[in-house]
Image (cartoon, rainbow, N blue to C red; front, side, top):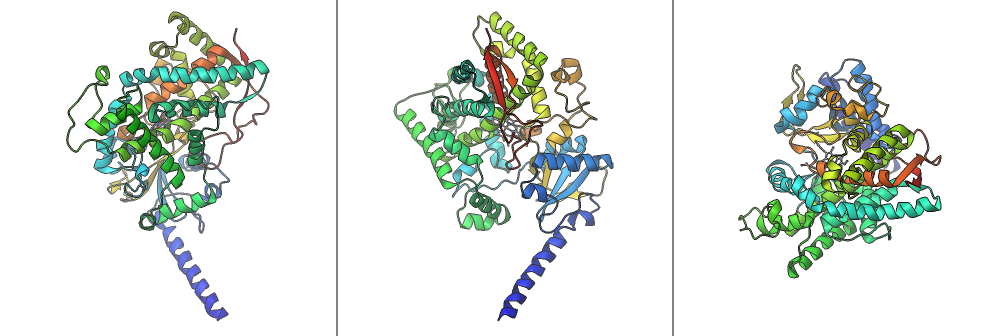
Length: 512
Ligand code: HEM
């Protein structure tokens, strides 16, 4: 009996091993270079075991293979094959020129059992195209101007909290406070909730937001099943996020929409625009947000679809922008002349606008724009991102075919830290984005928001939020790096967004 069990286990092991061996021969047999794969992790052992950040690992591979003259490489996550584009012209083809071969991300969604998963980030094909067309008008500068006061109100609450800490001489972990600021902004604009996490850091909204970004062992197992056996995930009705998280966000949207419709309430936020899409199939022109428009049949959003978009705005928007502001402050804390110049600009512009932070004032802060651009170059929150090949694609000037169904990885961090494109890449130099120098940046080497038709839809919203947060801090505080911040920064090894493991600690003093 023991021998039979042993034989069975042995046979299963041999079968799995053979399967992996064969899978791991894929790139070599096609003449595509890449790091040698090992059973069972493939080429990403350190990332899978959470010993290394994905962005850093890809940068390591990029540097090694680019220096050997390769324009692309093949890697494996377990047995999953991933094509990595190293050459900017190839990146440009994938994101822009030959987009019709790569218009999907290959992210699992299940409209029926997990309606919140069917959002703009995960949808593909005509469904994505149709939704993108509908949502694009919600991000025009006119609509963002309309919401601007919400950004300012939330930043004022943040400034009061920072002031109380500064006056007590307390060090602050700025990433946490900025995440509360961005949670308040998105909570208000996408869900219509006054979260006020500055006063109450443990609101259910923030807790649920944090839970969505934390991966327990159970979550990791569920996500692995979803990624590897999507048919089984659909059968078992598994969702990407824990069910209490999706239930919470779905109910918030449903309750707020019902309340607004019943009481005829309108507000200047995304949710109002999503309600318009639900009822009318399109958003109103900027000047007539409350006007009646005849519904265009079959084009409106359902309640679930509206909730899914609010959910992705929150997921894609709060951590990315908080991280960007944190890194900008980290760099300015160490480069005091840059901090000084930025503060002088903010003070001057504010003075010109009667000491009120308006949308137009923000647009005049050009040095701050360069600081944000350089922060996103040196510390892109999304160090890599994925596309899925939807139609076989022959890599130009080669015989290599990227087959339909394969994942394609874009190494944003590696390109943006490549000394061939950005000399002294580890130096924080906002003047790289001066008008004349900016025009010489090679195409597709600076891509913190992606590029092409699937470029980040929240780009302008993000820039406004980041600039509002930074200008309020610069105007009100001088800041230095606390010795509590470990140098060099150590990045989290889990999650896709680059974020410092021990946070960023600052000492603040008020500006007179
Ligand atoms: C600094 C902040 C942000 C960064 C660095 C960032 C970065 C990115 C990147 C790299 C992509 C993928 C682009 C591609 O595949 O070509 C993306 C997509 C997306 N982002 Fe952002 N993002 C930021 C803020 C936001 C905000 C504030 C929102 C919403 C309010 C948002 C919503 C989205 C959505 C919905 C997509 C998917 C677009 C589509 O597939 O059509 N992002 N973002």
